Image 1 (cartoon, rainbow, N blue to C red):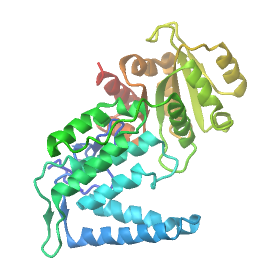
Image 2: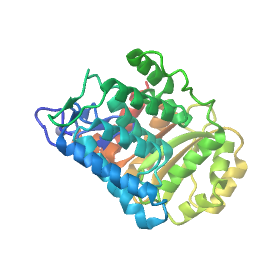
Image 3: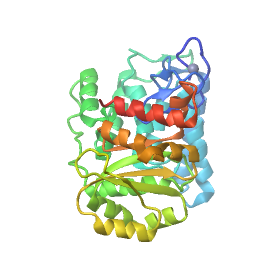
Length: 363
Ligand SMILES: [Zn+2]
């Protein structure tokens, strides 16, 4: 993919993926609207990459998924496909969406983290404004409308069952995307419906998986905030037979909560760290069903981020909680790179920029 900023124009191997679904150029931090920037074009080269990737995927599938021996086949498939997608192959972009959607890439990512990447790939095809897709002489172009409808079905299928927190983000809202797809392709998505409200147990699992991903191998989050009720927090701690304690005791993640007496946090609501089992048990025991804001920080990440978050009684976290309206926020390195480099500042300043922007976006 080429950067859309004419002053930059660099080739982007991997864009920055931002918390709200936007992608940015890692060199100049311009927002790139689409996976491929300028548009799709099928060439002999990206067609070959995609074909090779499909062969690898098929080899892996037919090997019966037996153990790790064939894992590299799947990894090759994904990497070749990524290359083909960024080089402008629409079917490869759709396939990348599928790989993230169905959890074939980077194990240990939480569901929302996977879905936001999948969304960008799917949307790049189905919401693409072009009236046709270009193909080099000698390469057959697919039926463009059919391909986009296929991508729209995959996208809506995924969004029909995402966690509620994810659905609450405008970009990813099922209703908004369905309306958009219908305005483009007519009324042919009637069979796809948003699953009835996500159960609380799914949410507990999502929070658990996000915390567990701080100790994982793939991309790990830097920090995040969830609003929960007391019972859900208890369920998160109990989920997975002691995972929570393993994570905090092995210092993989730092967790703290604010217990809000009203909906918003007041000056008297203090941060309560949950750094060991005794403290957690004592805190849970006192907790009723009141609203709790849980924040986490992956300890493998830069300690200065944690300092920035916790200084002045968690001032920045309070700003995010009181200003932001979403039930959860999770930030990755890419968000900090974007927020910091954009204004050429320190890590602390980057955290501040990031939170100011996230809280303001809701105001
Ligand atoms: Zn750029």
